[in-house]
Amino acid sequence: MKIGYSFWGFLGNGVTDTPDGGRSHRRPFVDALLARGHEIVFLQADRDRLEAGDDLGGAYTFDDGLPRIDALFLEWRWAIPGRNTTVCGCEGHTCDLHRQAQLINHYTARHQTPTVIWDKDRTLRAESVWRRTAHTRVCEAALAPTPGAHSLLFPVTEDLLAQADPLTLAARPRDLALGYVGNQYDRDESFDRFFAPAAARVEHLVAGKWTKTGRWPYVRFAGRIPFEAAAGIYGRSLATVLMLPERYAAVGQMTQRIFEAVLAGCLPLAPADIRFADRFVPKELVVCSGSDVLERLSYLREIAGTEQHAALIAACVDRLRLFGLSQQVNTLESVLHGLLQTTATERGAA
Image 1: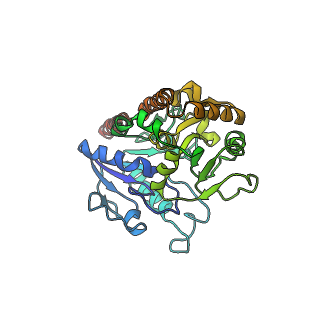
Image 2 (image 1 turned 60 degrees about the vertical axis):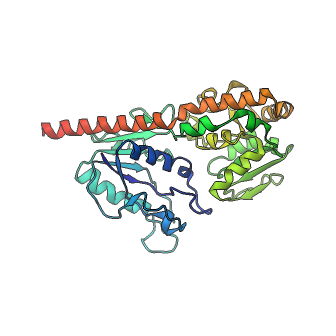
Image 3 (image 1 turned 90 degrees about the vertical axis):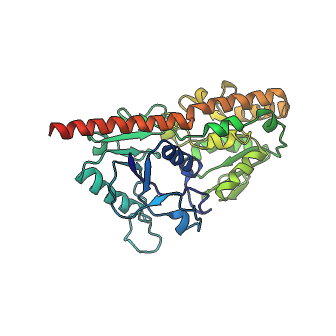
């Protein structure tokens, strides 16, 4: 089918000073859809070319108009005051929300085009009309999505899992006991409980946009780094802490940080209040407090480079199969096909 795909981010490395976790998985996801015979047309701006100066060689199609499509697929955008709620053309304005509204008005509302909303940030209101419209479906990157929504996790390619060699990763020298790559958004509580107490005692590094750090003067913040540099920090780190906003933790929505860390051999410690924590990591890596984090780090230092260390990495790699790309593409195809059948039936009845 021909899928109109709306996202606000990058397919390549993009630019440093911008948040876009989708860079870790968006391009493989799109490539897998293309490989299955679907036609993809991107309906937002080509930010790789316009902002990052990255020429993707004509491998992808962008269209700022309203082309004919069989289905609309949206990475859901939400209102960010002062950024996408301002007047077009003014300083600092991004037009992602206006464009999304145009797409929904034209395709979903006017022409009743089958529409799938991937609410990756859990910002679509529970009472949204799009959750109860016959020709729309909502997907969430959670193991326990909102009732009526489908579980579509952030994907990782099976090739990367196959290439991960636990023995080689365990043997890598690591000068940091604890590393973290990610932004501050809604993570202060987890940081206070799990990361900061350990950071006061061990070698560590935090990269990302952290603007309010005065309460942690002993924590080493590196600021934003290029997207491709994340693997280098995880490659130096013995472990990380999977810090999630509460709205993610409550439904078992794990971010792409878990596979970025594990594939670099950095062991993820998962706070016990993350729903389904033991489906994401082995039970030995589930922690309940900052003192737990320190205790696990002490143990990991003792076994670093050993077969026990490699076995833990292997167990974490095995857990990543939950996010397997093929399974996630199967999910989206199933949702789309069901939606197309429902829409066709309704049109025939009309």
